[in-house]
Image 1 (cartoon, rainbow, N blue to C red):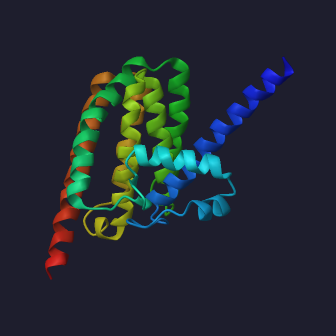
Image 2 (image 1 turned 120 degrees about the horizontal axis):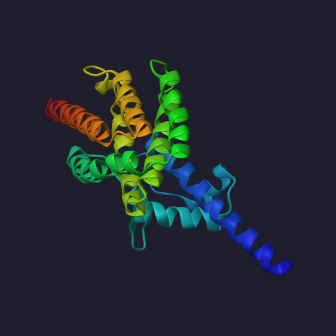
Image 3 (image 1 turned 135 degrees about the vertical axis):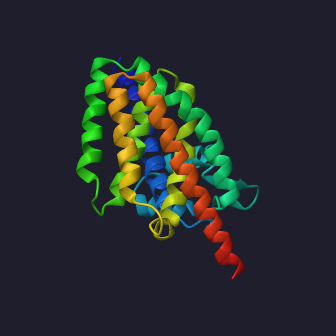
Length: 233
């Protein structure tokens, strides 16, 4: 019996280590600490993150399956590149999933769920207007995970890597984004969507999600147009 319990604990620990490795590496990809096109060196990650080789390897396989890394036979893994055309495909898929996700979370969230989400929304309010965009990006990841859990539809988890790629695109071109748009606008949309889900107002949640996605599409097209213009000059 003791052996069985220890095996179960070891299995849970291994899973947690894989999740931790995934989250840490995903963070490095989004924050551009691992540059687009860069070769992934497994041994360097083991040393840098102080996580075992097996969890790192499992996390890398998951990241490749999610599309954040690209696996090439006999050449290993590289960080997926960034381009406007890729980002528009990401956005097209993300839009379809998000318009299911947000109303479903508002419809199915429980009272306990609402209390937890309200605290996350309050964190957005506290960070709004500040300079810590890294913390906002990490909070956004947590926010989306909660919406998936509250939606009651695990298949909507496919949106997570799409959000990672979207956050990276925004972060990579943040200075250009700020020439036309405000960071606080994105935070305000998260607050409005969160408030609607907390209230259980499915119609309002859908409306705010539509407005948010229209805003994201607008600035993504703007960034793509500006980047193309710079490449021609």
